[in-house]
Length: 244
Ligand SMILES: NC(=O)c1ccc[n+]([C@@H]2O[C@H](COP(=O)([O-])OP(=O)(O)OC[C@H]3O[C@@H](n4cnc5c(N)ncnc54)[C@H](OP(=O)(O)O)[C@@H]3O)[C@@H](O)[C@H]2O)c1
Image (cartoon, rainbow, N blue to C red; front, top):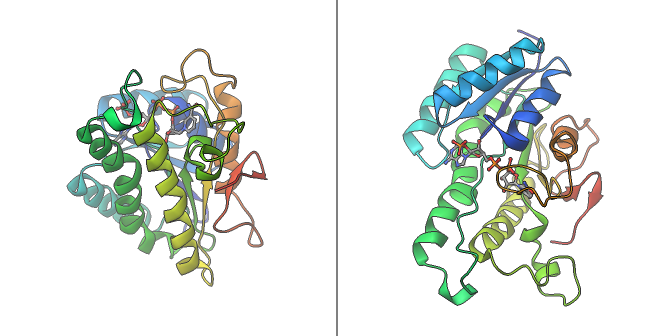
């Protein structure tokens, strides 16, 4: 069996996902660059290969069950197992001019389709391959905006950030899902944790964001490479726990 680790990062054609693929690749891990648009996936892979990284494009739209199934079958036939799954793909679709009660139900549905159901379906499809790894690791990209405790606490860093409610609640659900799955995995070699990357300068984070992309990928990389005694079922940013 090939001893080199293999990682799949969804939504890795740009932003934090691409940088996470780069940093894992530099640790001599084979990276599967998940992209819903293969042309974008291939061009990201070209960029990484120029830096000496063993990168391969993988078509995966996490809101499309058939696409997830096809991607899992391809990884099984090409690699036989998966060591790291980073559920990084995400959307922020809210209309920021609207109040919580005014967001269209369609926004809530489309946000949950990618940010929550996409994470669950992708995880279910790849879990059998992760269980074949000596040290399976799952990282769910959450956000400090998913912290219900912070949202309920006046004066917290996100108390006033109620302009993306569908996004915020979808990430709270990702946190809750992480805890549920961690319980199932607690006696296995697979660990699952939720990551807040920071407020990062990407298309989603915007130019006003505080963190450079290099730093924004660090929490995902750390959780993807945890040792056998590492965390399971936590919500962290740069090694520090965040309130649920
Ligand atoms: N940036 C921040 O400040 C910040 C803060 C907290 C949490 N996060 C989380 O970190 C993750 C990455 O964010 P980012 O800032 O790097 O965002 P980004 O630059 O907007 O990139 C998002 C990635 O997700 C992909 N994607 C969206 N829907 C998808 C789907 N249905 N199937 C597959 N891929 C899909 C996008 O693909 P396309 O290029 O095809 O659209 C893109 O590759 C997200 O989960 C986000 O919620 C970000």
